[in-house]
Length: 191
Length: 191
DNA sequence: GTCTATACAGTGATAGAC
DNA sequence: GTCTATCACTGTATAGAC
Image (cartoon, rainbow over all chains, first blue to last red; front, top):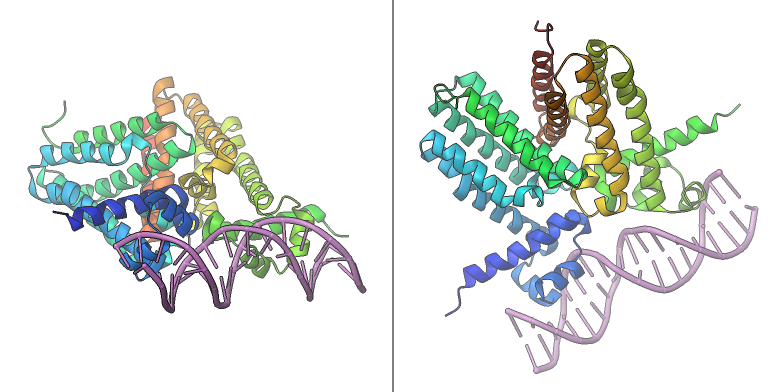
């Protein structure tokens, strides 16, 4: 029996990689055809809305992944474990800095005007979930919000810098510092 | 008398804005023609190398601006003034978060492969100059390097987040936190 | 579902008149 | 220097055979 959902998810994941490597404008249908092994006819069969629909599906998949592996655990699990899990998931997802954040990349150029809502929701969910976890861990309310913003922004910056300087160790060092800063802010949790 | 350098600089600045708004792939010659008021013939007269040459000229201009207004003062002036000047220049250049960093944007997609050297040099110069200023201000050597990395990455992250969430106040808050962190690291300079 | 063929606008780039 | 005309090519998208 064929798992259509898994097939579809794998297809969207392949397309996502093309967008990550080339950007929205640079991701031509011929490149997507080449990567996925599907002809244009098949692609338009799955995505009647064309390239915009492909990008929308990609962003939806990204949001779903982060919801499941990061946002939801942050809002549910006890705080120290949830934070540990976030850093593990971040490192795994971004391949220790070798993979960029599609939401961040799309936010920078004119692509944002097409997908601004999905991009805004993604970052809002992340910051909000992280802030909740920090509050449950005992961080004061105003500090928790600022710290959550600072951390999510810091991850984006570390991804940009790692790619700009072609040095994944920059990402590893950056996230280590961000993580240490979170730990220091949590009461009775200074290692 | 006509100042050709000034004219040329203004032209490159106009092209830079198109690249910032549309990205490298999205910045079509027709858009550049429209923005600058020059026909394709004139553009190719100034840039025989075409679009790549235009982007290269833009990156050179950006590097020159930062060299003059940020890197050089950081390496020359006494540290507290130089740091103050950096934060003023950063806020002015990025229009308090309304303008993105072209070097960071180009770093994220396939454009990096074309201009990787210029992008890498830019961030190296920035981090290195900031590190020097911090050391002169009394920050220990290993901490100064990490702090410089962290600050430059944080600025990139704040720019990304501000645009992603369409809220320039995110950039202002982010840079304020980064600045405060620098000040705290400098001995005898805790306000 | 997947393919090929095709439509047609837009791309970067060049040539040459002025 | 600036323009218009034009080039070859690639872009997204569609239609229809199988």
